[in-house]
Length: 85
Image 1 (tube, rainbow, N blue to C red):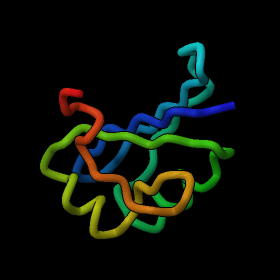
Image 2: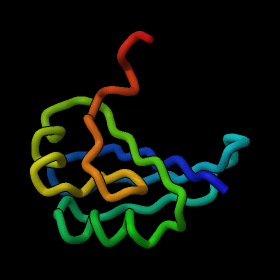
Image 3: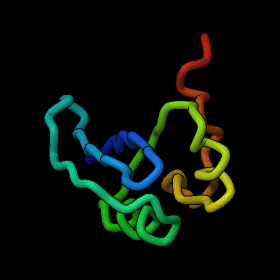
């Protein structure tokens, strides 16, 4: 089952919400804004997983620490989900 992970990143904490293909919430938790903690939290969610986050002040930092990676382990181009097709 595909899982989508939404990240709301702030200076001291991040809220993660996981939803299934039907849009039903599977879980949510608050994680410290720390590269190791975020990476561990994302990796704890079963694959296939699709993390996404808004493009904001923390986006460059997320990219640097590679906390948000796709199911193949590649860093996601943050904000690409919002580009017009």
